[in-house]
Length: 588
Image 1 (spheres, helix red, strand yellow):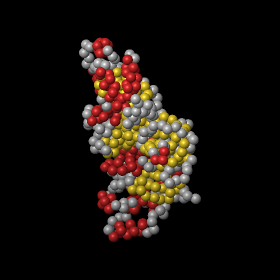
Image 2 (cartoon, helix red, strand yellow):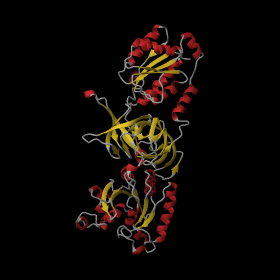
Image 3 (cartoon, helix red, strand yellow):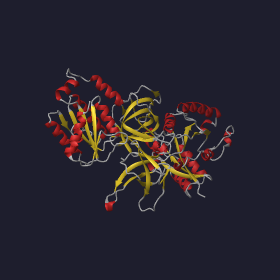
Image 4 (cartoon, helix red, strand yellow):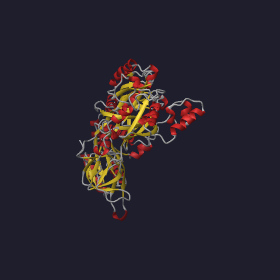
């Protein structure tokens, strides 16, 4: 019978003995390759160097030279109950990024504190990181008890102080274990040198950790990686492809895509060179087709209608750990990656921050510096789909990218109220500072003979939108109306020449431009491909209080919004112009 496997991480301040604890576990469980222990002992003897159990892990020459663990090295040992994968995470501050990488895979953690040195800065920092990463099973190993003569009072003082510290983080350690890893005290068995301690050894505690729940029992989460369209042999399938993060789904089940809220029923489950599948579960790379063809974008999250639903919001409250030399600052746009979604975000608020140097809690800093841990509010330019990390960790973790490099990582604590968002503040401040002349909108409408209107033609690419927009501008101009047509491509290559890759910024600047042109009393026409409900809502808010008319050409890409006019793909130009002109005349 195959034994279960568990991932654990061991962390702590530099030189507090993490690698020695692991080396001892490897030796005492007979998990070392045959002859490995003697080989290292003989090598130490040849070099006139005292043997250390840590040398069993320090395979890299640089690590032995520097005396510190540089990488999140993995090692393996086994007990009668389990096979363990141990991530030996670095303790030195410069290697905290690697520590986060190792800890992110862990189901439980051992945090090592030197009894002689006591609680150090990284002892606290690693406590914050374990809390941030959502690791609930934590045991504190108080090492080097031999250096304090196995004193119970020294041990109890560390227990008292560190327990109080962890309570601030809402972390409740499962146990505190006094050990001497060098001598094997309380590692594989309870030591006679500390007869005042009668609880578990480290090895017993490891076997006492609860195994993480299988991902297949969690709610179904499927981040959409791509959508493939087939055209050969009259094949009109759209296959939505990606990997199942957690849960299971079967043919015939009803699903919903977020944040578009489009719904359908699974028709088939597709795979490359695989037999017909009726079910897809966690860890599988698959594709889906649906009873009803719907337009889906990569980055959406597919979930089952009957499952517990994720949260959808533009604002999240999160714990982050910042790793970049450049600080995390407000009023700057970053990229947040969660699952397959890529969304522009800004730092909206710093609720609390742990200074990397002073290790104090701050609520007044305006930026998050390197190695800081902070609770923050992030605001996205469009809705994020996520779970609280306490509910579904696989869709509750994210990274933040700045200048194409991962600069920080974090977990979602909860959604945050959208009241008084950065976007709303921007609109409010714009309107408060808007300088107006004495010619009001009503006077312009009387003079021009028409109201100010923003006309948006949307749909897929190459559906005839541009031809309709161009003809509409010409017809209105010939009728002596004040009209101007400008496609979003002009914005991308002109006003937005410094942010060609940021569609959300294209939409924002297009909306701001529309607000100016319609405020002048003109009819402003634009074409935008693949416009969705959220893009349209932003354009409406930005152009308020002026009118927006939406014309969808071809397949309707909206879900909750109903266009003012729907035209067939490549419509007859004259008829399309006539219908849109009638909408302008009836606008208030």
